[in-house]
Length: 109
Image 1: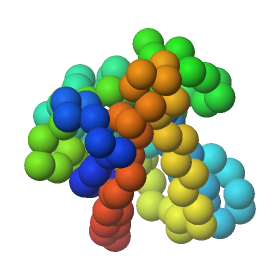
Image 2: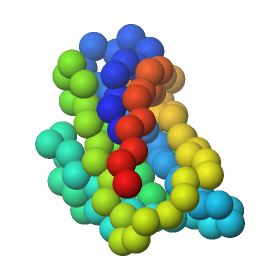
Image 3: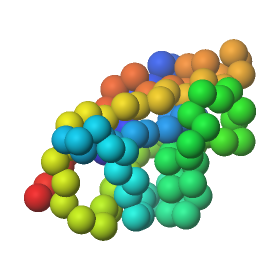
Image 4: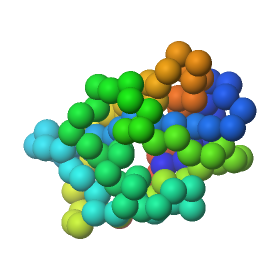
């Protein structure tokens, strides 16, 4: 997943969480998230938590904005992706422009 643009914040781009659903409607959690912007364990815990309706900035992902921020998801096994739910950044109203406005999702087999 490439995070290409936010809503205007100059320094950060952020997400609250992600949910990958397989063809049976089950949530599939990746075993690893790779990014040069944040340690893998921290990304995994913050993006794939159970409490997704939060405005607590400590529980959300806020990354340094560059030309593009790349998140690479590694799964334990192949599955058919039926849906992806993106929970956008929802922190303090001063930072309401950090959320992702434009992203690109690329999948391989």
